[in-house]
Length: 160
Ligand SMILES: *[C@@H]1O[C@H](CO)[C@@H](O)[C@H](O)[C@H]1NC(C)=O
Ligand SMILES: *[C@@H]1O[C@H](CO)[C@@H](O)[C@H](O)[C@H]1NC(C)=O
Ligand SMILES: [Ca+2]
Ligand SMILES: [Ca+2]
Ligand SMILES: [Ca+2]
Image (cartoon, rainbow, N blue to C red; front, top):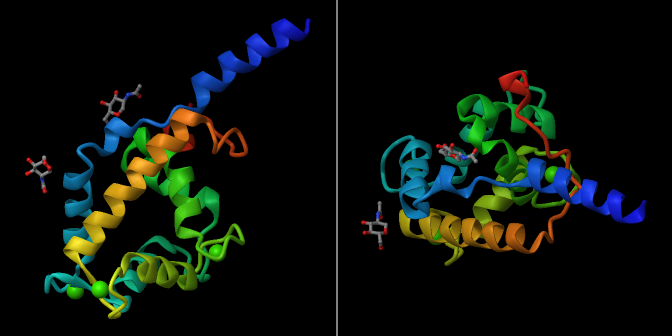
């Protein structure tokens, strides 16, 4: 009985928790495209105002917060293959770890990407940070350290 429970758990676990990293490979290309999109004025650096703008774009109802559900659903609508990964990204952006995303978190995330601390994130700083982060998520996923604490499941936007 215990054995069967474990088998059932593992089957469930592996089928629902797999993060599809191929959806964001090659990491350097994905990161570069993200940077180009988020560097709104195209001057080659991401300012705090520009990461604030990313937040505003996703904060659809303008209440200053993005819930886990809002965030993961949004990424899912962009690409269903990103759904599981979006849970990891939510935690990466949630810099103060209170399980909500606010502008403060995005600004904290900007500071983490700003390796030389000059207040601006260059393309190199951005791409370097994201590649390392994707590689770290890939490793965590392989070791299952992030585990089943999340509602890993199918993309709700896909209606499945
Ligand atoms: C992973 O994502 C890629 C690219 O979006 C997609 O082509 C592929 O089918 C996905 N694989 C799985 C197992 O969902
Ligand atoms: C990504 O890395 C590969 C291998 O190092 C390289 O050939 C490619 O030009 C890089 N792409 C970008 C967009 O930096
Ligand atoms: Ca800019
Ligand atoms: Ca937070
Ligand atoms: Ca910098």
